[in-house]
Length: 159
Image (cartoon, rainbow, N blue to C red):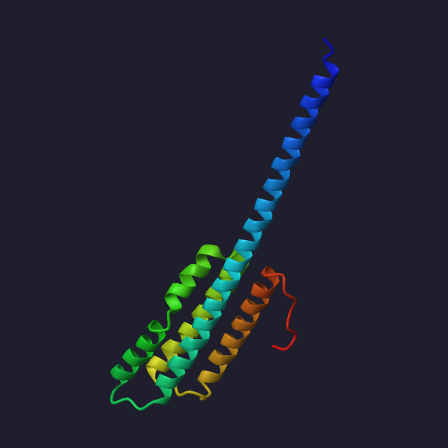
């Protein structure tokens, strides 16, 4: 019996199956990578939006009239909590790479420093408020830049 045709057929089948498995694995990896990128984009958008909303909310409360210092403190803190900031922050911690999480954490803490200042009675637009706002802008710009880099998007060059 001539074994060459059988061996050739068997070798061809093994090569074909192996190539199919490799192609399927590569396709699966591309899909997983694409899904992970989309998830990070969603989480980054949620986090940045929550930071913006929290900043606007605490600013609006700080501009309002309050009957007492404790009422202002409570209102500013509640405005911050009510924006979903803590949930968005936790999502960032779960899916973001270390450099983005660190930058996001700095932006979060810079906003908390503003929140604490407004809760103490610092006036919006005052000399005491200005460095806190500048610090927040710098932290936000750095965070956005790292997020854009992670998503494969070039820098804006406008901040």
